[in-house]
Amino acid sequence: MVYQSSSTRLCKIAVICVLLAGFMGGPAGAEEDSRAPSLGGSYFKYDGGKFSHYLELRSDGSYRRIARGHRYAEERDYGTWEQPEGQKLLLRSDLRFHNINAGALVISMGNRERVKTLPHLRKRIQLFLKDNRAPEFPAEDVERLRATDWTGDPTASAGDITVLGSKRVNRSDLEKLAGAINTFLSSNQKNVFTLIPLKDKTSTILVDDEQVERTKGISGDEPAQLSYSVPTPSRSGYHKIGATQFQNETREVQSVVFAPERSKHQAQLTRD
Image 1 (cartoon, rainbow, N blue to C red):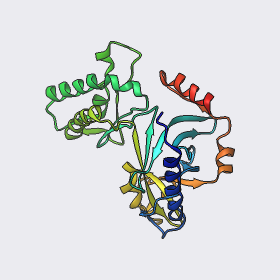
Image 2 (image 1 turned 135 degrees about the vertical axis):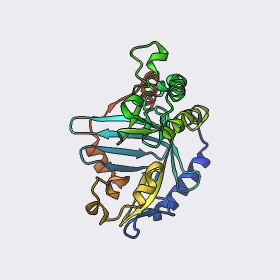
Image 3 (image 1 turned 120 degrees about the vertical axis):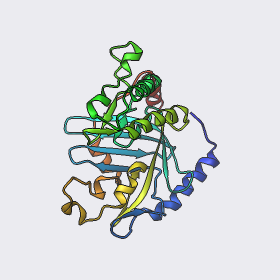
Image 4 (image 1 turned 45 degrees about the vertical axis):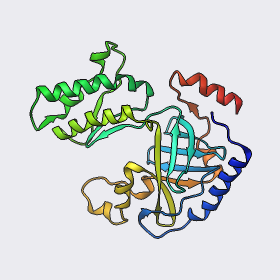
């Protein structure tokens, strides 16, 4: 943990307080908000209908994320946050890596241990492309490209590819996925998640950077006109909520921590 001097911490909190004015208000529709929301000591909720995600931003620069369903409430992420540009919110996770995406293809990196299998999976993809010259492939063939065959560990399901919303996979997407693995492995930002403030009617929402363009294009009339399901802005980002609501809705939270992070996290909880 990096410790800051009292003067540095006070300056940081002062800057955050100045940004408070930018959180409330804004015209209808989701558009990028040049005025960042108030952050330190704040709580946010992502309403997914049957589930909810919560984000707690503490004044000391730490954060945690909680997932809540009908029968569970779990702390699934924690780390530190910052706003180096005064607008984008950066979450630097102590527990998770961001996913690897290419078109309709996703490699879930929720468990940091999965990074060890990525070189094996990349090799499987490259060999598959070499042996199959078709312009597209069945989704099930792509999802069979598992890193487990290379690790020799039958319990290591890490590195599997998920195909989203398609029965066929373009060759170009699979080629891009192999390149995305290279980029991910060389990056020092694997654990950094970016949230962007967007105006949503009378408030500001925090939206994952990968969802910004889709969220900005949603208006109140669009969902009824489309034949497929499109999330409304209220379900595309985190809305600010009060401390009382946060406490009431996240009672009895259980920690979901992957080894070897567990002992580190438990030690931090003891100090807190």
